[in-house]
Structure formats: structure tokens, C-alpha cells
Length: 151
Image (cartoon, rainbow, N blue to C red; front, side):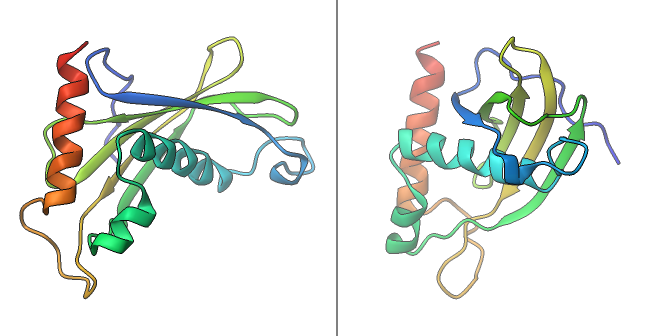
């Protein structure tokens, strides 16, 4: 397995959410079960997309769905019961028309706990992959590029 990127670059378009770790997300050792990391990243990605004007509900309504085709994690330090974490989702530029994102999960003090990458492809209602970005997705990428240009 190839090592994924190590950090979010300052010029990338990013959005951060805070998540309180719930009791039902930890195992008997009071450590978050690794499967919940996917949900944490999904929560950040969903908030990032909404902030950029294209929610998953919009995608469904407009007929340009975005299934995840790859996701990779590196677990650096455990997330524990009672922690509040910060999950940042950032767009990895240059992969269009795919949506490639990078994530950092940090503790309250800013310590890095985990990093991840995801790749989504845009498909129509029949599951056919768009070879170029459909209009709603092209608009999303334009807003991302505009945000990056302002940094």
C-alpha cells in the first residue's frame, strides 16, 4: 500500500467540523472502533459539500451521484471515549472530474490522530460514469477553485 499524503496544504479548499465521540463508538478498551472513522470523514465531507453549494440530496435530485470507489486510512494515535475531535475535509486538486478528498482527524489540542483519502466518481442514475463533469459538478469545482484563489 502506498503511503498517502501527510497533511493538508494551505492552498487546498477545506472545511472542519467538530465531533464529540459517543459512548457507543468505543470498544471495551474505550478506543473508537476503526469503522467509525469512515463516518467521521463522511460527516466532514458532507458539511464541506454543503458549504460549497452541492449537497448529496442535490446530487440525487440532479442525477449526478458520487459513490466512494476508494478510501484509505492511516491510524496514527487512537481516538478515545469522551474526546472531541476536529475532522477537516480538503479537496485534493487536479483529479477532476473525480472528487478526491484528504482528511485530518485531530484531538482538542490539535494533535494529529488519523489521516485519510477518498475518491468518488460521478455517475448518472444508471450508474454510468461521467467522463467530464456534469454542470452541477463543474459548478462545484468552479467554487472550489474560487475558494483556493482567495487564499
